[in-house]
Structure formats: structure tokens, C-alpha cells
Length: 488
Image (cartoon, rainbow, N blue to C red; front, side, top):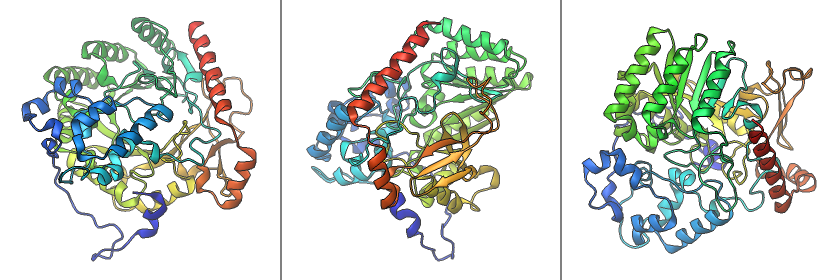
């Protein structure tokens, strides 16, 4: 699962192919293997209410679930991370928790410790301090809003970056909090290291402002409805928003973004949600609008029969497509076999289309997850040719002020210093009068620990931002954004 060893370790099997394809039957791991769920019934597990009320939100609850199967040193490691490094608070639904160490059989005190440390899903859902790098825990150019989405808000929560597409952040919560969340400055509860921003306007006013902008901006045809996660919005409110969107003639594509299809599939299997999706999908079809669901799975172990049921339910309800947008994460899936295993598990088992793998964004304390552009290019090479062309995901770099770019689209690359240069062919909403927007180059930065010695030395001399300076810069940025929001 580690980029340092995975590509070099490719071994051909008896077929002579570097990757041995084999269809795998999906299995729901036995949740009763964990002491805290020993008496949980299948009906309880299938209940979205039970799932939501039994999320793991802190170290105490994790101890109650796992008992002494994991050593105290792991809990201490987690507590330190929560107090010193975590940009997201803990929130892990039972469904997601159950996909950690799925093949291990508990065998007494401490028996799951090493497997839990090594588990790929744990690695990004419950990060611990020892996971993080100590040489460069944050890149000098890391920022809370690394993609500058808030700078491109045309209404509170509505980001207009691309010419024909917008991102609508309806709410700031999710049913699960991933440690690498790119919207860590807004989504979820504050942590000791991050004082989260808050929406200023009332929900009805914010959503109304979004609609007003879309009605008067006919060049927008595509709306990604996100947050947070749309699964956390009461269905009647979400359906009302979608129905209003469908009344706008220029809107041709609507994409619902939800991690819950993977981490809380029980939500999408509720009768009222399925019926509501069918009403919206029927209306969309009648108006020639494509309605799709975009979800977020990073490892094959997360794809279980319940996920497949939820995906099938959405397709049966009339959703045109269910697609996956994963994140390329060292220690999780930065490995050709792991990526292909996930893609085939999605495609064969759950009828979910592999779509993108994003490089992990330049947020604070994420260097242990990030990989270089060069490694991302090699990974793209190694996954080509196995999947159908239409289901072969692109690995993309979301370049600040530019947007998604396939990793082979860079304009130039200083591999020694780990600086890639990118161009674009459109203006964002904050560059309407910028004469150089289409001619300048924009920079993206590799993790410093992946660079040759000369490059690491250069950053040691030129990129040293001490933690107090970084914290002050973040506070200033947060204050500026809060002031801008209050001016609306």
C-alpha cells in the first residue's frame, strides 16, 4: 500500500500479467467480531438510525468498541494526534468501522494492534500521530482552503471556478469525517489545531442566494450538489432544492456528492429516500437533465454487499450513473494492485463507475498521505489497459486557481525541487479582468520527503515556516474570509 515499495514490487503471476484479475465476491464483514457489537442484530445493522447513533466519535467510544484487542499505545497515539495534528474530528459510522481489519480474527488482548495500525481504511479514517511525518508534517505552501474555493464564492457556499460548472455546498457536515478532507476549514467540528469557519447566513437565505445566482447566470449548466454531504440534509429539503434546480432551463447536469453511499449505505436504502430519488430522477429525465451520484471510496475493503445494494437502488430509482471519486493516498491505495482491486470491486460488484483519483490536496498535516506528481504518473501508467476505457479512472491533480488536470498535463516539472507548473484555458470567477490568466503558469508542490537530497536541502533553506508563523497566517486568512462573509 506504500508508494515507496508498490511500483518496484510488481510481480507477474502465472498468467504472465503484472496484475492478475480475478472477480471477487463481495462480503459484509462480521461486525460481531468487535466486543462492543457482539450482540448487534442484522436488523439493527440495517437501520440508518442505529448506524448514526452508534458512530465512533472519540477515543473513549473506540475503546468501548475494541476493548483490549488493541494495545493502549494505539489509543495514546490517537489521543496525541487528536490534540496536536488532526484537522478533522472523529466521526466513523459502524459501516465504515466494520471495513477495518475485516479479515482478522481476534485472539485475545492486543491481537489486533498491528493489523489495526496497518489497515488502509483506518489510515485515513482514524489517523494517529505516528502516521504523520515529523520532518515536514505540513508543506510550507499548505493552506486550510487549498483550492481557494471560498475566494471563488459567488454566493455563500456556491463556488464558481469553471466556466460552465459550480459547486453548491449546502451544509457543513458529513456522516463520516475523513482525515484528509480538502474542506477541512469549513466541514465538521473544530479541533485543537483548526478553528473551523462557519456559514454566516441562514440556510434558507443561503440556498435562495444560490438559486438567484444560477437563474441569472445562463452559462452555468452543471451543478455539483455537495457540502459536507447531501446525505446529512433532510430529504424534503434536498428534494426541494433539486426541484428548484430542475426548473432552471440552463441546468443540464446535476451531481449529488455523498460519501454515505460507501460509509452509510443504509441512508440511501431508506424507502422515503429511494422514493424521493425516483421522483427527482423522473422529473430530470422529463426535462432532459442528467442526474448522477458521485461517491468516495478509497479502498476495495469498503465495497460490501450493502454498498452494492445502495448503488443498485439508486440506479433502479432512475439515477443515470453512480461514479467514484477517490483520493490517491500513500498507505491506503498508492499501489497499482490496490487501485485496480478497488476499481474492479466497484465496477463488478457494485456497478459504480471508477471516475477520478485525486491527488491529496495541500492541506496542513497531510504530507504522509501525499505522493509526488511523478509517482502519480507512474501509477496512471500501471493501471492502464486492464479496465474498459470508459471505466479507467484518471489520476488528477487539483491545482490551486486552476482546477482538475490529468497528471500528464503539466507544462513543466522541476523534479529536483518538486515543483510542477500548470496552465489553463479558462478564467475563474475571480479572474474576469486578469489579462494573464490564460498565459501564466501555476505551481503545485510535491511532498518534500520524496525529493532528492538536493531538493530537500533547497526547501530546508528556502521553505522553513515555523509553526507559529503558519498558525498566524491561517488565522489571518480565516479572519479575512469571515469578514467577507459578513459583508454579504
